[in-house]
Image (cartoon, rainbow over all chains, first blue to last red; front, side):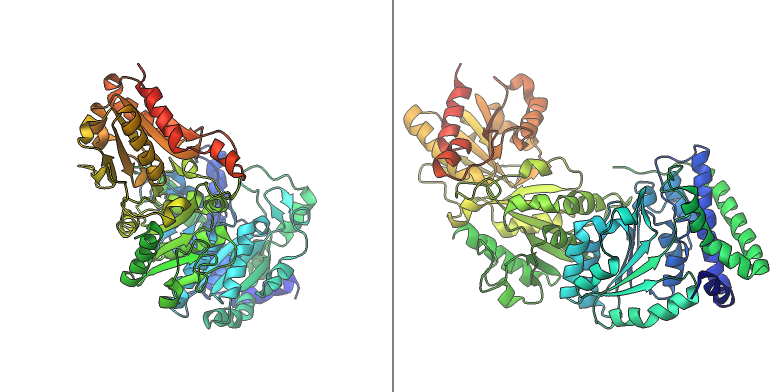
Length: 306
Length: 331
């Protein structure tokens, strides 16, 4: 299926909620870059521009009993789990109402069964432990961990894959393969493939080539159900596109590569497929995020004692 | 009872009393029962919660942190403490950070057990005492096994602390008897600090010298105390904290004030040591009352050789402590 074909399909099948969430994440990330540009954010942040559809597609395959591990590029992961852009922005800005008091910031969030941390590969062994706990105490629930293509350089990934395969733990690994690890193209940092690496551990692998939500869900539903049923872990690899910089103003890719990423952007594909509905939703979310930025920016600093 | 048996009993007791407790490690299952036999019998009694794992120190420490994140209690055995370096990221950047980095206090009930130290000829990568590398990590506690502390009580304290703990076990102690301080000395608990054991002759507050040392040093210090008494008529009081970090020096002050010299003795190699942290705290509290700065006794700044005569030359011996006490008392 071509990207264009998938987009036409998705325009028919993506409901208003999905579209609103996709656009909420998009405008949230754009707002962050804007805030950075104006010097109103401290530190750094990693936006998921271009990859928003991954957690949005997955949210209907996950339940409240599942544990989700976000990562350094995790705003979309969080927003797909909680309709709480104000809490997340307050966390990133260090304002009152921050999810974690402003201590964790962009990369370190804990809320109910959602957790993220900032070291590559570190979350996989932890997620394996959570999966072990779930298998014993809440069969049917799973641990879902988001990683990137660059994460596969870390040894912890393989220690965890070995354990979860050996013990048939309910772990769902979502690989957002955007073709670039910070500034290093995947072709220059990965020998072989994610698929071959997963299969070497006896772990099932499924590749996703589309950004159409309904197609993704149809493909993954039976595979995720198998993880829940105790048939062992699963690696799902999304061929996706990072259309923004790694963090802020640090995109060293050649213009042609960035243009190709933008050509494949779900935002463009969805917009072309159903322009009127898309435009209405786009305006609504842009306005919602603008209002949140104004409101959160006016809040007093968060309070925390070490 | 031997110290190793006491530790084994503590793990049995923990698994028995806490249905959420796990023991995880390499080669820990029966009939092998662990490289040092400390987990003997555990997997037979609790097959679901005693997990033999691949050789993956980072992976299994992260696994334990995941269980702890869900409210379980997890004990990880690192076969040789040297290998805990492989789990440093999980301990320092995940488990210890998680206690506070999410803005509110998150209990992480997790103990990483590290058989530690030399004296057995295992060579440079199987003989180290890596305590100092875990000192000063926010959210992380460092404990050391001792023949004067019941391991069950220590495990209960570590798991009740709410944060991850690294537990160093001097391998030499496994075959030593609990509470054995020889026929000359007595031992009790330091008033005001229930985790500090005290070994002394008659009046602990009238000793010439106070030696602060973790559990792995007890035998060597007591031997030195004996020779100092019999050969030099020097009296010493030994203080053995179970928790090395965070370290509270305040309860030690009454004993320290009466002494002419204070030493901290540990097996770790020189440089950036636990002892220098302890000395700094004591200096801050009683600099003007001290006759001279706290003296540090360490192993040499060296790798730990395999050959017995070379290993002895590097590691702290009872004679090292004996000599250091005399040096500290010299006017």
